[in-house]
Image (cartoon, rainbow, N blue to C red; front, side, top):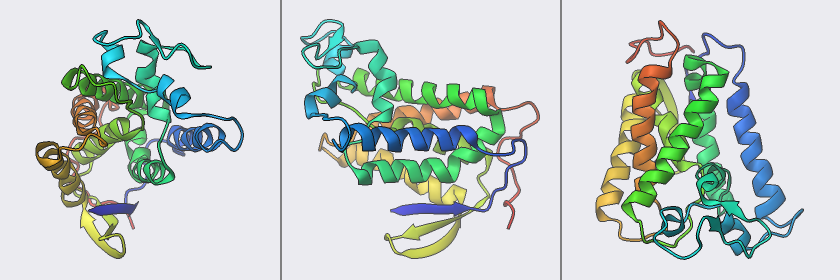
Amino acid sequence: MFIPIHDTNPLKSIDYQYVTVALIVLNIAIYVIFLTGWVVPFNDEDAAAFAVIPAKLLGSGPGGDMSLASTAFPIPERLTLITYMFLHGSWIHLLGNMLFLWVFGDNVEDSMGHLRFIMFYLMCGIFAGLLHAWMSPKSDLPLIGASGAVAGIISAYLILHPRVKIWVLALWRIPIKLTAAWALGFWIAAQFVNLAFDREENVAWWAHIGGLAAGAVLILFMRRRGVPLFDRTRGGA
C-alpha cells in the first residue's frame, strides 16, 4: 500500500488551506480530549453514541431515534451521520486519515473555496455513512472515522489533478514519486478488491466506496468556475 507524504501541487486561488487545517486540528483535539481519556473519561458506549449504527439509524434495530440514550451523550441518530466522522478508534486510524487529508485536502479546498469545501467534506462523509448503513441495514456495529469524507477528497483530487506528482512511501518505508493517477488509482482499486474479498467487518469498505462516489459527483458541480477537470499540468516544484 502507498502512504502519501507530499504532493507537488501549489495553491492557486486561496492563500492558505484554513479549513483543511481546522479539520485536522478538530479531529486530533477530539481524539486527545475524549477517546484517550486523558481529559474526559470516555468509554466504548459513549463513543458508540456518536457512531453510525446501521440498525439504529434505519430503524431496523432497538433504540428508537436516540443512540444509546442510557449514556451521558444521547445523540439523535440522524446527527450521528456527522459526529461519526470526527471520532477514531486508534491513533493509527487517526494518523492515516489526517495524512491523506493534509496531502490532498488543500488542493480540493483551493478548487472550490473554504465554505464549499466544508459542505463538500460533510456531504461526502454523510453519503459514506448512509451507503454503509444501506448495505448493512441490520448491523449493530458502530461506524466511526473520517475515511468516507477523506475518500471523497481522494476521488475529487484524482479528477482534478491526475498528472500531479506525489511522493509516497511504498511498503511503509521506500519513498518513490508517482503521478496521482497511479498512486490514488491504486488506492481506489484496493478498496474494491477489499470489498470483494475481505470478509471481516472491522473496516467499512462500503463507506469508502460511498465517499469516493460522492466526491466524484460533487466536484463536478462544486468547483469554482474555470477550474478544469483532469488538469494536464504536473504541479510545481
